[in-house]
Length: 320
Ligand code: 4AZ
Image 1: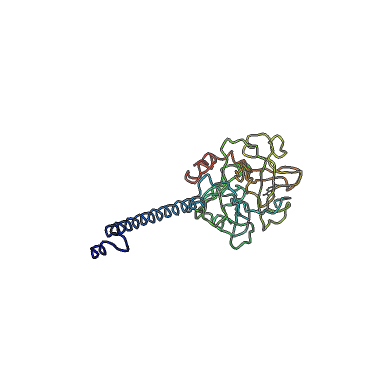
Image 2: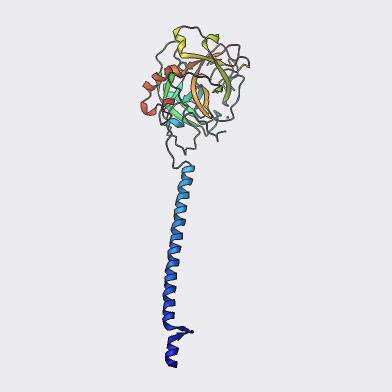
């Protein structure tokens, strides 16, 4: 009996209870394993969700620019024109049109392969030597981006009318959201767009006074666009339809030689800019009259026909 008792009791617990306790321990252990597994899976899921959110917030993998990306100033970029001020941020669509690496005119990036400039800036004898300098405020900057021009399409107009030309690049810019280059096309307006903008700027490396030297640093000036009826430079015949007048004669803010072909842009909504004009001509610089700019809205259809659809963006494409 005593023997039996000894067998039946382990540490004072009857043997069948000991067996039960062993089962309970195994059961408890597997439940703990299940809890740990569940904890591990939830932690893993949380990490995956947070990573996806982070990647989405930071813009995801590099993507090519779309029409809706045109016209935005880079916030992280560093911006005179007669009586303007030196630019302290980079206007990312601004280019210098050069012959043998010398600045002759301004130009404006409008797509992956295309820029606009003034037609009077083009001389066919220079064709082999044309390039554009991008991504710089200073023309002496060794880090600036030079791209050759492979083709020029001049508007088939005459005299100082229809003063615009398209420049096709030898190599496409292929800017992506991850690109370190501060280059971005300007947004083109719609063909029949009317405007009433309060902030418009001209930019360029042109001279600070008539017959002065062109500048190494990019300059900018805030100007007003005035109606043809208020502009001493324009008559009212049909040839004037492709032009507009802008400037700020009261403060002497004006474009000058070497600014031609460069942009007149207006802020449409915060940080989003539209190309309204191309610097064309004037009576001296910084005097009492406004200057004349090629009216971009008048040439949207012409630009669309020359530039293949895959590289054409106007604001009508901006919701893509
Ligand atoms: C030029 O010769 C030029 N003040 C451009 C603009 C103006 C005058 C001359 C306007 O390129």
